[in-house]
Length: 276
Ligand SMILES: [Zn+2]
Image (cartoon, rainbow, N blue to C red; front, side, top):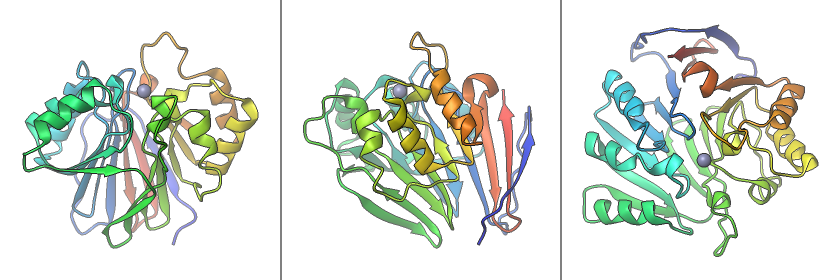
């Protein structure tokens, strides 16, 4: 399959129709958790939550998942130990049955320690990822971890798990908050993706040439920036300019609220809507 996707933008939809189960459909959410990250995928009866956002904003994640009738989550992946990505985890844990928790095997801070204390000895299995690893979730649905994490990184952002979720040849690249070193370390891999969760809320602390190299290598059709109130200037104008020069459609949670995508592989359509 499938080099060309017809993309339909439907903006400001307030309720979501569920699809009949015979359709080959992936549901993808990028939640508006203010300044933070949280995303959810439901495809082929497998559910994956990537980061939870800060505990201050996690109720949006929980209520949207409950509206979707989610009762259990197969995989929760926490990218790295910063509060804007993971401090909502224990609220999620208290509301849903979580089968597997995936963490980076890297530098830990307070939140991961707290999470491990609660989750250890429960029915949730904890898995640690340090090296590139492939996980086949079902036919034509793969989770591929790309990171090779250093033992003593200078910057916890660069311990973010980077991974690709592939449905057929349709790839979503999740990058946590990786900065320059993390981005450069991926250049020798096949990271071309239809959708990019833009690293680090669209920050730009790096050498412009290196950012261009990374974004050019990904060449995303769609770039999702998860950001909100912040004093860092995220997303940075330079990042936006580079993405625009690549003709990538930029979707921002600070402008659109929660972003919902429905990818129908039978019809080759990707429908994008916004849930305020
Ligand atoms: Zn962050």
